[in-house]
Length: 312
Length: 312
Image (cartoon, rainbow over all chains, first blue to last red; front, side, top):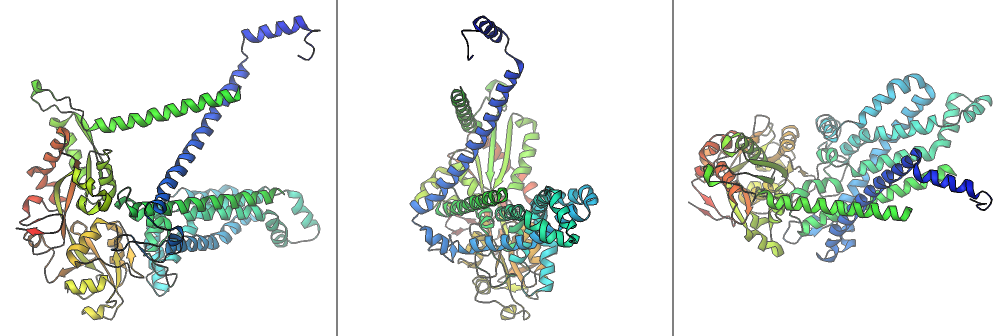
């Protein structure tokens, strides 16, 4: 190509041959390219459609139903079917944040310690038996978690603490079980990906295993561990059915952890089917969905931020 | 090259999706109206498909009847699909022409209000069954009967202890339905005569099964259930001294009942009419309707309109 004049004859021959027989690896290349492009397009179109649909419905509340954003975010009373409809979503936002934060607080130490045990202390049994067992938790449908919560967690809390048993505490316990596999799996991957050199250097300096774990292993992998926790939290934030069954769904900020409360997801699942499309109540539910979507974006950004810190 | 490829793929996808969309729409529109009935073969060979969507309280009945209907050789050409989704969804879909039959627990006039009021006028009501609700309490509670005023006091939060209505010194826990629920609207309208408050600490659940479980297990709980859900895990309370029994309901002595509606947009087409007639036939009304815990419409000695006026 660079010297076409010198190799003129040779170049023409090659070009002719290429035109006659399309090399199979080029076809493969092309098929692969088209296929992957198609896949990514489907994903982008789907995500775009979801964002568009939720925002177009969710924003109607502010534009045509005359509810202000600050009123929705800070209002304390939710009574869409009242004589004077009131749309205050603060109790739900509070419920969503408190349950998912509490769930992360319960699940993070458990998940990280389980990962430490499986990778640092007993890698053999950990890989072969414990990891599959914990990953099994991820496959249990959320309605089962909800039912177990209602049959085991709620009565237990009712017996131990004053109150009805249902509430933020019950929701957080059920959620912590649900996000445990996410946190454990990511923590296990992060810990086993740590270079052996660091650990060996620590042992060579005379550190015990425990000192190595909490002075070297955990601090080095902290961004990845936090990524797992944030992903777990974002799952907890979006979980609807299991929480709805144990939290009680009263539209108020509770006075204790053992009193009926609501989350954004639980109020959406409770009311969405009962309201007609286009009514102010229905639109307000879509606004709550929009808040959820926005929160998911925030979680994604936090994860990206942590990833960048890890690579530094 | 890359850009051309991308544009081609994007175009293909857009056209593909658009085609899918319009195909679905047209099949939905035609679904109910397809009618290849032939007079020469006796006029019975109707064929087509029906989509029924909405109320989860009516769903078991419509589902069971639709199975019987499709097994019947007379209607072999008709397929009926039944979906849940809630009364609001049912009314929205039938009004938008997405479903042929919209199942609802309450009158369309009550759901379509204000700007949507015209939509209710287009819909034709078919009352297929009557469902009655009973006040239930936890089994430990000694109270046997509550007056209307006592119920109002309890559900609006004026009375919070069972000792004020003749029971032991115990806190009352309300197990309510979400404010948009048809069951709750019926209970508020006919048992309380006023709207109830979502008071702090009250529980809200949408599914009758969960309500029953919570009333059965939570000390001091009160709630309400359709008669078909009653069993010995909960205690049924008399309303103003009247027992929620079928005799009292059909004679109009016990007022807490409502129709189950199947709505069609305009007069039902031939296929929908055949199905609704089948649903109203004695064969179904006296067997399946009773078996599933509803009361046949024909038995009622009183009638009620959308505004709640009762005629003998």
